[in-house]
Image (cartoon, rainbow, N blue to C red):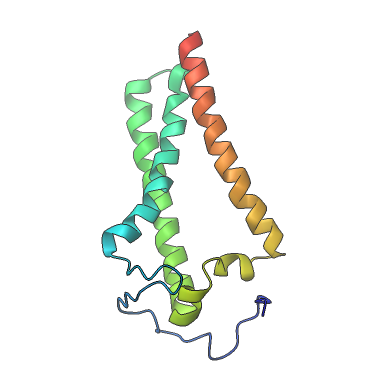
Length: 139
């Protein structure tokens, strides 16, 4: 059946994901590795580079770009760690394995808002890269 977004007591197992438990994906049969999971985090850091592409108008770019880029990566890393910790501490391992979009299932106010957010963030990152490229070629 369709997952309705509510989590039963069996699906909320605190500490179920405390230790690594790499198992084969039920659809593909591929067992993830630590480095494959790091690849999920990598796009979060590449989107930050779109901001540094728009650095044409900064007064002191040699000072502002490193501070801004390192600060953005630190904030993004902290948010990712908090999200992984919160989700991993309250959702069972089985749900995380079988429901790849579990965040959309428990999103507020509805699933469609989370899915639209995913699409718009991808389009927004692409537009930022294009804007940085266009502005860089004009100036």
